[in-house]
Length: 161
Image (cartoon, rainbow, N blue to C red; front, side):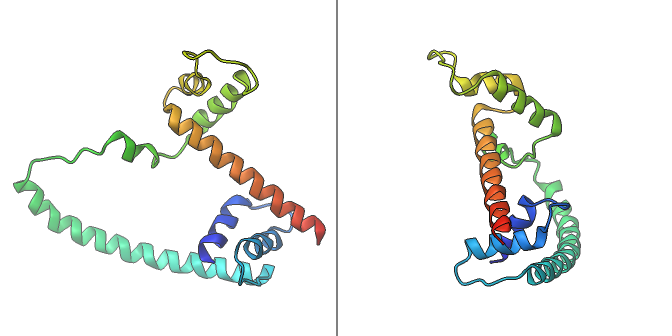
């Protein structure tokens, strides 16, 4: 239930009318055994935020301790681990410039237009974005479409109330 609550909070930005009721409706819709009200969702989100703060403090302390221990080890070992392109691909957040370029490219290259074999639509879109691969552009579009669908479903649920 917690991961669904976090997803709902991320989908519905601050300032959304009746935000916590919408979040509660989203959680109730996606978790079978849940019966959450807007106040319950708000309390749980505040509790998660407080726990997250405590976990970050603990993680930072542990990270510093492990860093001081590993500095001694890295002096002995000079090899650098290189992450593959596929591992780093999904972890980079999209910048505002990249997002705008993606949106413009999607308008410039609609899915309804026919493209020949060498002119793949997603490759053309990736070329416009410039800093992202074809695969990253496809994944980002799927994520955005999912967010839009979830937000519309949550707003439709609110309007029924």
